[in-house]
Picture 1 (cartoon, rainbow, N blue to C red):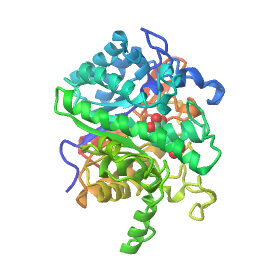
Picture 2 (picture 1 turned 180 degrees about the vertical axis):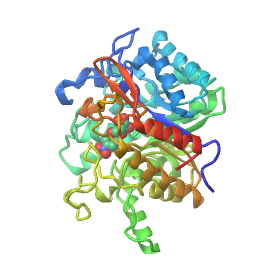
Picture 3 (picture 1 turned 45 degrees about the vertical axis):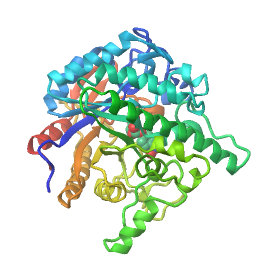
Picture 4 (picture 1 turned 90 degrees about the vertical axis):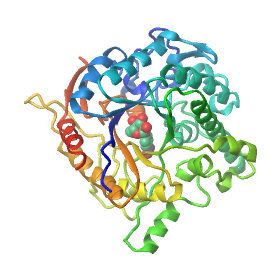
Length: 441
Ligand code: PNW
């Protein structure tokens, strides 16, 4: 089975990374607005970013020019809700307009409800530690679903809880830039499970809410990230060893099974046992329509756990320093489908490159083209072997605010000159246009 005719060839973004207009039309501050001073390269902020809030029509026209069929974007909670139950109609109107523009261009909108910029009013009340955050999230989700579900059918509740919990509250690299303060391992795990439980409960209840209220029949999932190990060799034992390494018996937040086992299988990983009740698990585990995965590299070559014998000097790397491992999407599709049995969607994949506008006025990015060829071929191979792969959304449609890295790291298909906001399609955008036209590599 090759890729289907209605395969979702897409590109992705997130509100805080592209919108700008940080204090316009009643938007209130989020944790990235208010807390990032001192934590981001060069003191960059998302105040203006790509000014997508004002330029979305131009951006949708460029998406249409590339020929993408789906655009995955996130709604900004602090733009839409100025308090737990206070709707900011002007902020909400932006998303209605964006969705209308996309539909007119024949592009399917795919909405992520939470891509990291928690409102400060929620953070000040304890954020993801306060059990009330689940109700706050639900009241926000209800507003968005009521406003957009007449036009939107594909929903993602959360983007990468591993990152906003792990980097946000444990390692401190992302907002709210906190590190785990615990007197013991037990206490640390209590805290980590508490934070994660609130995210999982908010996810489960949001899935129920979307199914109850949506106008168009909804397709609901999450966009997860986390460790993925490739087999070292092609025999069954190697495949099993990689599978076991990907789903450890005692996972932490950077393992997929920390999130997906409770949400999809309805089982608790060891560290959550005794910390989450059966009643809570019933809420967390809801039927999902797809497994969304954000994938940049396989974990075989990551060094976060210390020196790694598989990493060799001078390995191919992106501008993020991330290793280039083209088989990652193949193994991701196989491995996650084997465990969770859901249709598979790549919600993010892409690379940061040292792009600039060259003397001929163009942006030549052969490294990115090569990266996409390799990774997309792998995804195709998984589909040919029978894994139901439903789509691929490249990260990102355009260069944007790369969190703690600021604007240096360019992931886009579209180059953005931040002095003028001029957009230039990179060579990779033309390459992707061709892939989409042909329906594959
Ligand atoms: C994802 N890591 O973040 C996010 O969903 C995007 O907003 C982001 O721009 C993109 O990937 C590129 O970074 C990640 O440390 C952040 O492994 C950090 C990691 C992975 C993904």
